[in-house]
Amino acid sequence: MPGEIDLPFPDPASLERGRFSYFPVVPGKLEFAIEVRRAILRTRPQVIALELPTTLALAYRRAVSRLPEMSVIFYPDEGEDEQAVYVPVEPCDPFVEAIRSGIEVGAEIVFADPDSGARPHLPDDYPDTYSIRRMPLEKYIEAYRVWPQPRSEAIAAHAGGIAWKIQGADPLARVLVVVSLNLMDPLLDAMEKPQAQPMARVKRDGVQVLNPHPDCLVEITTEYPHLQARYEAFRQLMTDTDSIDRPRAQLALFREAEKAYEANTGERLMHWQRRMLGRYARNLALVNRELAARVFDLTVSARSVVDDNYGWEVWEAANRYPFQKVASDLLTITISGEEVWLDTKRMRLRRRLPSQKRRLRPVGLKPRKKEKIPGEWAKELNGNNICSYPPEDLVIENYGRFLKKKGKSILSEERVHTEPFTTSLMDGVDLRETIRNWHEGRIYVRSYQKIQGDVGSVIVIFDEDRDARYPYMTTWLGEHQNESDMAFYSTHPFDNLVGPGIGRGEYGGFLMSLPARRMFDVWQDPDYDFAETKPERLLLAGLDYSLSQYVVYVAAKPPRSVFRNIAARFGRTIVYIPIGQLSPVSLKKIRVVHVLDGYDKREIAREYLW
Image 1 (cartoon, rainbow, N blue to C red):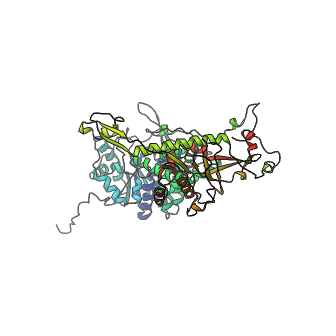
Image 2: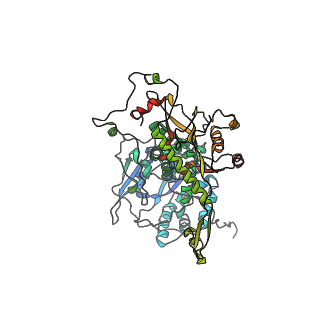
Image 3: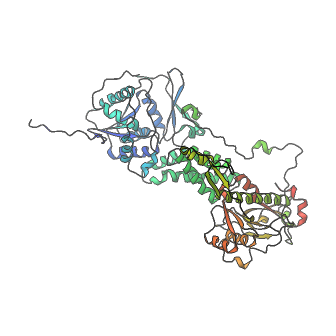
């Protein structure tokens, strides 16, 4: 007929349907909170409809008005188990951000989710939201919608109730609908036809807004508080998105925890530990099918790579949220993660710091000796000769023997031969290879080739000394046939006197070689002058003084490839052991070195060392 206009059918992949614009989100995720705020500030809709319960509208408005201070909405569950329900209201939740930004632009906020009893279960297995920092948001949503999600009558009825509320919005207004991504397609289908008013609760009794204690935030929030604090700083400017990029935020978290760790324990992290922290956290994230690690994985990485003390500092730094206060006009409560979430993980951190109770010594124990007057112990230094402390020599010699055995075991593992079982079990069944080839119906056995030769020198590098922290360099000769010659570099021991003529230092690296009493001063030997670093000089000396074929080199990274050729000229083989494979507890025990100014100090050393 004249005057009629043919309207095309809407594109099913489009999120624009007339006056309605749909913005699917992943609840509780930082990246979608950023995108929601950007969309609202850009389009400035007149109505914002949210997939939030209508009966919690007043509580949500009260909680949002307190931001950036977080809140928890509490109400009793009227189900069979009669449990309490806690709903954290946090800045990084896209629904909360939609309310905040909507109020800023003067939009009407509509709570569209009907409170009609038990909410139908919807799968919430989303791709990692960090991916939208590297790909368009539209591609992320499209990739999710390509795979059909399960439908049921309960889901359709729930989507119909939301659609009824949205359809009743101002007919002349532009409406932005913020909905969970897993409910997106059922809602679009429900919006295609008029919906009837659902049988839903109009009011819910017992709803309260509470103030969570600052110490419990990291357990109850979806994004850890340290990240949410960075988001609060970002949303005021909306320019520097790098400040809340997850890997950058994790790096800042590790650095903040490292400062506290050094202040509380006096120990420093090595560069290889920092690198391994990143790798460990990345691998844990990949195991969980994620691109960026969560706070639990970050804490596990810190505890595993360093120790429990550093894990504690990472957890404390992650929980740091400067906007949260204990004093409030609301009731302040402390709640655990088990009260908020269904699936939780437990981790035990054994912090080993001296407590006040441990400082209170029983009567009868002698306290650690101190100088009567400043400089008293320094007067005992004469510089005629120096020597080591024999009990420490035994510890480090034992560890050297352990490294030699470990080096030979690594060589043996590299020469393992696996073959199908025929007439002999050889050195045992190879379970891994047998399971891998289970379809063949055969058993595989292992054969270890015996390693000819022994390990001579052992070099351990704790720190490559890029910042010249270890200026003290010396060479010690073994005092008997079972004690190795030793060259090392360390902090200057006599800068930290712990007794009269007794200095305490920290190894940066050392070389051990048997038999004893053969080693010249490694640090003055012109044969090693072409070495670029202290570790390389020790490695050259280890190759030179080793009487056996193999030389063990322990460090954060392997030596330069040129040293393989140098070792071959000496007729030696370098066995590299990453220092991260060794126990950090054992490494701490052997890293401290005490230097005595004279053999007479050995008689009194035990009274001053710890």
